[in-house]
Length: 430
Image (cartoon, rainbow, N blue to C red):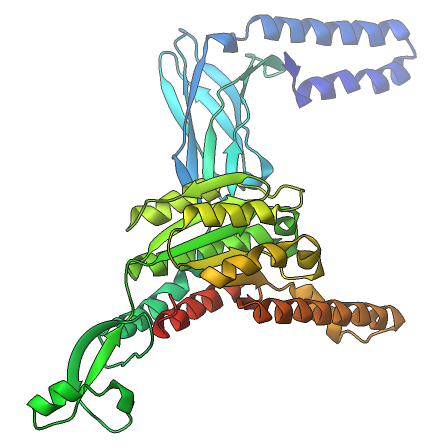
């Protein structure tokens, strides 16, 4: 049971009443009368155990999108029910209000909608449905928690999809749909056309020129059906916040954009989330179902506070690939990368494949480097500058081992990685 605020107010009257009358008997008599009314009100309250409740939620929703979760409450009793209903959710569900007024006639049911705007990626678990049935005098009532639990999967926001149209336009140019010529090892012959000033003389087709009266050049297009292997680091480095979200969320954004672009280019995409073991894997999926599969598999992944096993990651890559491929590793570039054995493990892989490491820079480090307000800021700037120099040194060592580096802010890393993919595609290095 529960008591309402009017009951508390009635009980509080006993204090000034006792002061005025200077009699303990009057106070106790007053409190006894209030307790009697409360007991009578509870006895006349319909039992909430006779009510039925069920939830209806969509299967999934993207982060920061609006959705409604419904609770259907049925009243099979012959009595009219008044009270409150609370639809409990986690705070990250973003529900502005979870309380609903319950006014349920006998033999009817009502649907109560709770608007949700999830602020975190992952699985949202609902709490119980709490029903308070008020008594006829509204002094007290009965309360029941009904364990009607459900799960709402919050998919990655994929805010980087705004960069996709411009990259697809560049991809169409590379594919020969616009007047762009590509020359390089590993590219496929597309067509012949007349020579114009500025064309590479090495692209002249002398046999075709001999058959015509004009000089003819070959045009090329990127190869299709190449393998793009994306490894998402889910170790402790992925838990570091860069900007307003963990590095893992930034890596997922870059993964979705690159996968969408590579799929449109006709390449085969495989994505693995890894720290010391495989946390999620998507392979053998192409076309429109690819992004849905990636979002669903990566949504519940959370960073683990362990060191990544790069030797096992290199073995995983070797067992998954039988021909030259583009390998993209989304992780952090810092001095700890050398200590964890990442360079030692990936250097042999780079000898057989095109390896790109993408790392999101922490904007707070860049801000610390510029701060000069007081002595503490100067020391902080010195520490940030030293860290940045060490990070650049790590990048130089990786480039010497034929490992490409892509870095940028949380909002820049996804489009920059897509641009690097297009550059490699245009140069015929895939």
